[in-house]
Length: 56
Image 1 (tube, rainbow, N blue to C red):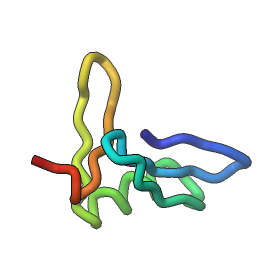
Image 2 (image 1 turned 90 degrees about the vertical axis):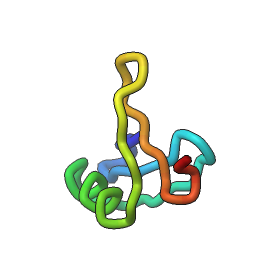
Image 3 (image 1 turned 30 degrees about the vertical axis):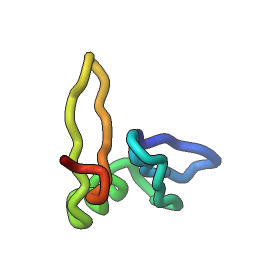
Image 4 (image 1 turned 30 degrees about the horizontal axis):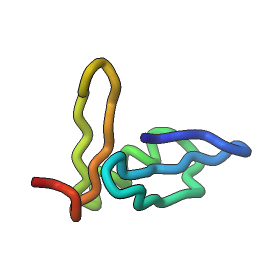
């Protein structure tokens, strides 16, 4: 999930809870996830984020 709190965005793995925070924009969090090999997929109408360690 990507969430916003106190004006900053946090990227969190929906499997293990690993996270990275302090992104200025939603797009910055998405870019980081892509560059680090995270996967993003639509599941039951919601986007989930999966870190590189939790991928099948």
